[in-house]
Image 1 (tube, one colour):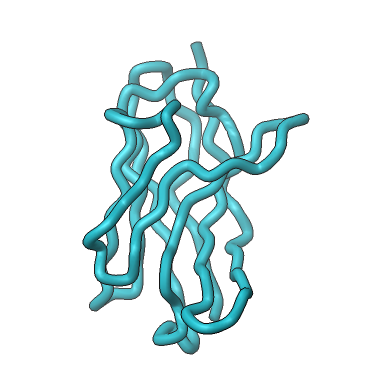
Image 2 (spheres, helix red, strand yellow):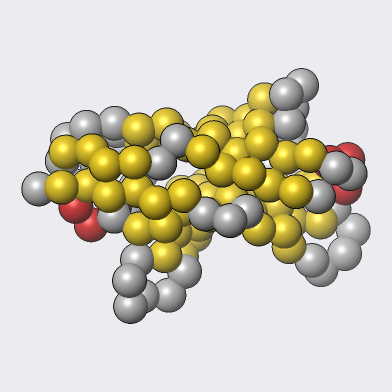
Length: 117
């Protein structure tokens, strides 16, 4: 499974960005997909996750009401719509896919999101 993120960039506080993560390869083995982020000097943290059917999502408290994760299984793409961005959202955002049957994760290369104040 290969994951490729896109959509990062520089935005002013209060602005919006949409991240995309395209998966390829043996995508049928993917169960839950998620977005994580890692700011300089901090641990990587879960931002949002979505189940394979898209019926269940969960969010970090810090992004609830501002970010929305969605999934297009026909295109093998997940999205992260980020609104009302804050400087503290600045981080490298990583796409993650969990294996359906094994304890194994796949990661993308990351995309930088920078929010200026």
